[in-house]
Image (cartoon, rainbow, N blue to C red; front, side, top):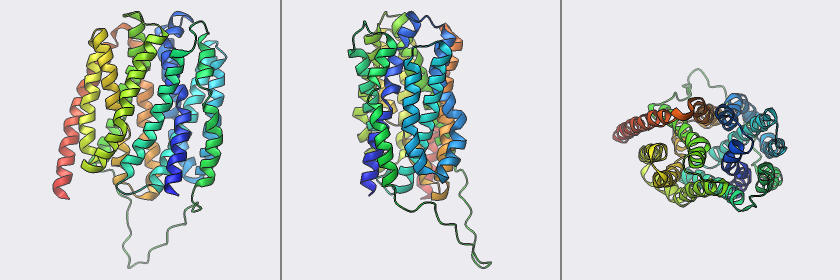
Length: 387
């Protein structure tokens, strides 16, 4: 049963990430053809994360009680968001489509992650989480690859609609996934302990969980800054790359991510998610320096390093699961998603506001990531000593 759930989650997540992969490669068209300003480009890229951030908490409360409904509805909402953007505008409609897609992915991600964290426990959790991320990256890679392959004479919105067509399969997969859940919901009410029995208090936030939350948010800011702003717009404006050239850079990042994902999951199961995450943050810092300050070769190397760093995208969740009782998984997952989705919003939004000075954000993020790497190493070392 668990294997079937993981497979269905992987397929559903994979189909839902086609639009996430396709959209950044179309930013040069929105810049040069549609003529959007830096602030509009930043707002459009950031709207996805903003919507997710705003609805994560209510979505978490909803998923705690209606997991099956969330699994069914999320792919439908994603499709509606794609259709809105596919109309081609005006800007308010494009922004509305991105916001709707953000809400849809918030519902989906909290539901999918709650499902895997609730029903997949033990030492294989890291591998299961990275298997989901692996299929998500396959969807993103295929989406951006289709953008690069489709005729350059097509308008950007038609390219988007064709590249996102596989998302329709997610509607069917969502129905299958909801039917496959074990029949144990809603969870039975906990028994009231007698006066003689000690009351088990929910585990508070440990230092490791706090660092996992902060690291997840900073990694999200880094990823969104690079993929949704720096790589496509710096590649287009400073190095003259067209839609296909930007797509190839993004594909390089996603290929590196795909190649590293499953080994990273197995390594996390072996040495611990916290220790591996400490190294991952250093990779992300290197990606910021190369893509923000390097020449064409540095931009390419930074894209590859970004992909390797993103192989650790799910590691903070493994730390969260380790120190969280089952009854609080959905709630803490939603809280975690607020930080991550806030990062997906802040990265491109602040970059758009800074415009030509976006390099300053890259420098600050690199310094923060190095500091987090050191803190993670210290916390994990202390935890190992206490074990």
